[in-house]
Image (cartoon, rainbow, N blue to C red):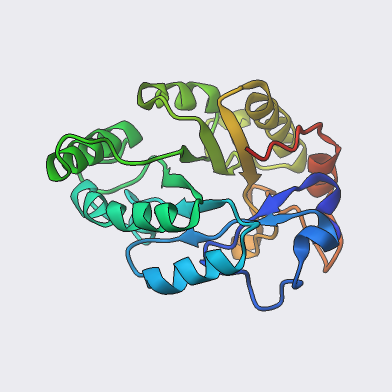
Length: 247
């Protein structure tokens, strides 16, 4: 956290509470906000509400990690519509803003495209709630290829600002288009950060990831190498201008 703090203002760990090794007050220590996540429908609303009330500095709640991707939240639009009122109740009781679902291009049959899943989710929610739209303050989005701006544009129909809660470029194949060197990833990082910074509808974003050990990090996406040490990509990330948006 100390290594990343000069250029990172917030983080999450895909859980409803910070990892036990996290400093007691990371905002005071490093100027970094923690944002909790409810991964799917497996949560205790009373416990979540109590924790949020005990931590009033937490203003946002991430929801549903990649519901249309196997191995992640993996929920049909109908299942998500059924659980969404529970999220809304937590927001009503605590004042947090709801950020989700964290949608992406997935492999759930019939819902591989974000718009297909979201359209059906909105329809299911409206059918179950008297025609009312779900309470969503921000849409979350994940992207690992070229063309981030165009993919965000596909989601403009929902009239919601974005948090790009995971992004990098893991493009495979296509000769020189494949991201297989640090320099190529640096170029993609520069472009993708500029896209996020240049759009008024992107409120926050988070590079994926701090450290990627699987398969030797073939796309060179790790910001951290040894403990407390930045990789060349991590140094580049911190060198890029950012607006520290906290809305």
